[in-house]
Length: 115
Image 1 (cartoon, rainbow, N blue to C red):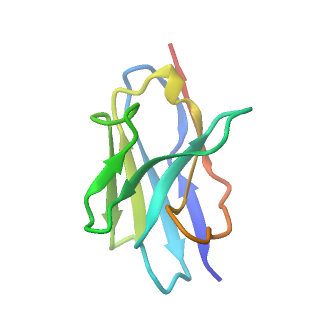
Image 2: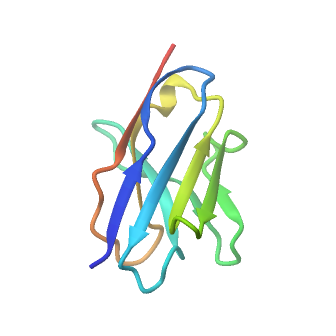
């Protein structure tokens, strides 16, 4: 059974950095096709970072230049480095497949950015 476990969130001030980690276990496809989503109350979940079919990182405009997505094969995780955080980045961050049939969602990790 595939399991996604997110970690690394927290409460930080604007301009700070956080590194989120998505550990993937039980997946025959490994880390392929895993991206990072975020969700705030009353809004739908948004895919903010993923890899193209060629392995290039792709970001939504709001986070481009501030976020970076990485694969850590040693940890079997997909990490999200978030720099220069803004209050509008506050959300629950989760990882999952970026297309096709989604995996069971993990609990996510809360990121709160204060002014």
